[in-house]
Length: 231
Figure 1 (cartoon, rainbow, N blue to C red):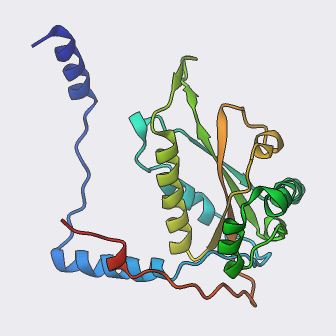
Figure 2 (cartoon, rainbow, N blue to C red; figure 1 turned 180 degrees about the vertical axis):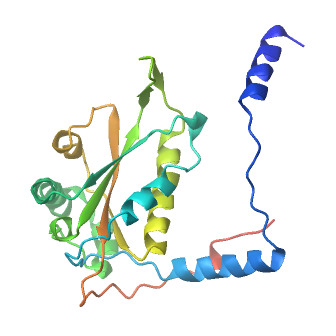
């Protein structure tokens, strides 16, 4: 065996720890899966938010779940900026609406606008100010270790996408509504939130409670068998 292989094997052996795996009875596994599925099926993107504040600790706990997501080389290539300040939310709304106006007026092809028509979206985004919290999610192209070493990240887009899915699921499970908002481009988030240019804005997640009179588009999803195949 080459010396280099022995060296890396030794490192891996030293860094290993026992797996803390919670074994669940088969009957309970199916029940849990069905309950979780039934709960997630009820999740909808909300555009009419209440100003009602999020209970203390709830968003924080959901973010703790998000950062446990699997990621390339365990480099955790994400940054979450939580915005509650009204002035910052206002600045984000103004910048986002400026990009959205360009999108709806000239950037988006007619085919795209036709697809959006049934949902009823437009360039106005009042929820960016109304909702009690926004979470700006950034994708890191590099990370700096405590000793100052700069390393590139791997599979960063996939890693941040999985982490965002964890966060959305956790927030829904906790009883909060969300909206994934992606004005393009989103570089204004780097400026407003003072984030380095090496961090690419991935998504702006709107979080809170739906307004009492909230309505959502009456959409229909494809049946599972049309989207899932077993071999």
